[in-house]
Amino acid sequence: MIAGRNDKMVFSYFPGCTLKTKAVELDRYTRRSAEALGITLQELPEWQCCGAVYPQAKDEIATKLSSVRALAQARDAGQDLVTVCSACYHVIKRVNHDMRTDEDIALRANNYLQLDKPYRGETKVLHFLEVLRDQVGFDELKKKVVHPLTGRKIGAYYGCLLLRPAAELDFDDPENPKILEEFLRALGAEPVVYAARNECCGGYVTLEDKPLAVKRSSAVAASARAQGAESLITACPLCMYNLTKNAENGLPVQYFTELLAEALGVKEAESRA
Amino acid sequence: MLDKNQELVETIKRISGVNPRLCMKCGKCSATCPAYDEMDYHPHQFVDMVDRGQIGKLLESKSIYTCLSCFACVERCPRTVEPAKLIEAVRLAVIRQQGMNHFKADQLPDLLDDDLPQQAIASAFRKYGK
Image 1 (cartoon, one colour):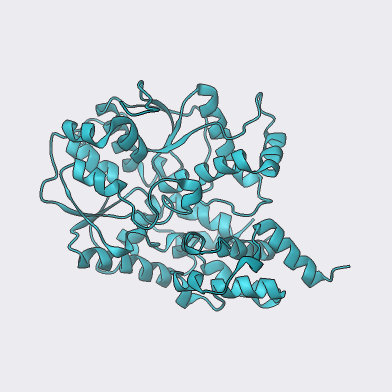
Image 2 (cartoon, chains in turn brown, red):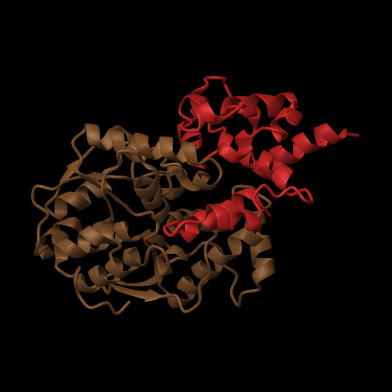
C-alpha cells in the first residue's frame, strides 16, 4: 500500500468554469472514469471560477479569494481537493502555497473572508492525474482497462500550467515529465515523447495576438508529428482550443479523461453529469 | 524624497517581489521565451531596465501584453529572478490607472467563436484589465 493513500478515495472536487461549459466532456469523462475506478468526487457545494490565471503580484488579494474559499471548504470537509483542469490546478495550488507561506497574503485574505476558522493552507490540492497515479496506482489502472489502446501513438501535451513553477506545483519533473506517458502506457497506448510537450501553446494571448498563438500551437503540433505522434492528449481546455483551432497542420486532440473513459469501457455510458 | 519615477520602480519591485540585482545577465530568460520574437522589450531587458530605473519605455512596451505567463523564464532562471513577475508588475502599473484597461468588454463579441473556452475570456479580463 502506498503511504498516505486515501483508502476511501473520497475527494472534494472543483470542476471549474470551463468544465461546465465548453469543456463539459472533460468533466463528464472524469466523472465516469472516477466512478469506474471507485473514486468518489464530491463537487464542492459552492464554488466560483478560480480566475484562470494566477495573480502574481504580492498585493493581489481579492483575485485569490475564490481559490481560498474552495480550499477552506475542502478543509472543512476533511478532504483533499481534486481538480482536472490544468489552469484550476495551477491557480488553486499556487494560492494554497501563498496561504501557507506568505504571512501578509494569508493575513489579508483571512481578514477579508472572516471564516469561522482562518485558512492557512491546510488542504492538499491534487490533480486527477495524481489521484490516478498515487491513489489508484497505474498498475491497478492497467488491470481495469477493458479496451486497451494498443498500437495508438499518442503524444502527451503537458503545456505550462501543470509543471511550472515546479518549486510550487511539485507535480512532475518540469523539463522531463513522465506522468502522462505512464498514464498512456497503463491504457495500453504507445506514448510519443517530443521536445515541445512542455512548451506553451499560446494560451490566452490568442485574444491579444492570434498569430502568436498560431505560431506556438503549430510548433507543438509539428514537434509531436515529427516524432510520430498520431494524436495528442491534454488536461487543459485552452490548450485544447489552441491545438485544435489555431495549430496549422495540427493533430487530433483529446482530453486525457476521454481516453481513460474509452479504455475503461465507460465512454458511451449514459451521462448523469 | 523619491521622485515619481523612482517611486514607481520601488512599487514594481515591491509588488513583484523581484530583486533584479540577483540577475547575472546570462540571458536564459529571453532565450527560452516563446514570445521573444513578438516582444519589443525582452524578459532580460525588463530585469535590467527596472534595475536601472528606466521604467518609462517598459510602461509603453507591448511586451507586457504579449507575455504568455508560461513561466519558462521563472523555471529556467539559474538565479531565481522570476522575470515574469516583473513583467506582470509593470503591466499592473499601467492597467491599474484609471481608463487604462487594455481589454474592454465591448471588444469581446468580435473575438468570440463557438469553441473559445471561458478560461480564455477569464484570463484576458484578469491579465488585461482590472
